[in-house]
Amino acid sequence: MIYITRKEHFSSSHKLENKGLSQEKNEEIFGKCNNFHGHNYYIEVTLAGTPDSQSNYVMDLKLLKKIIGEEILDKVDHKFLNETDMFKGIIPTTENMAVIFWNVLADKVKRENVKLYSIKLYETEKNYVEYRGEI
View (cartoon, rainbow, N blue to C red):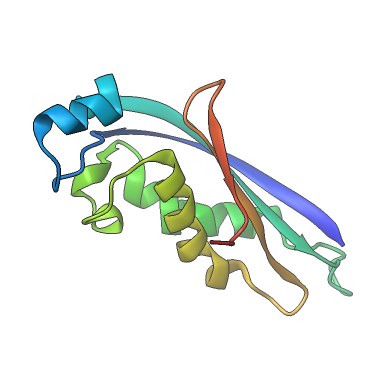
């Protein structure tokens, strides 16, 4: 098994808020993240597979870049996540974002020789989430 990774960047804003809770409870749970704010995110999409017999690529990274761009970046870059179709009714925590991105990409990257292995989403230089499709 060989693992390949494409790293991309996007900037988005959000507000962490559970609409089923009081403002006081939201402030208690989310702190200053309950206010409108933004991040410069980095996403790492890792695929696991075996090289194709003709190209010897697990997947052409130009193709992976295109898929990530069309399916993720075009929909979240410079957007207020709470108002996007992708996060309608979902609190856009980094954890939820990683799961949603997995769900969007898993079928798009799957081939006979390759599958999605992990999504790493960096919210800051020091904080990131990794999701491998299990929950």
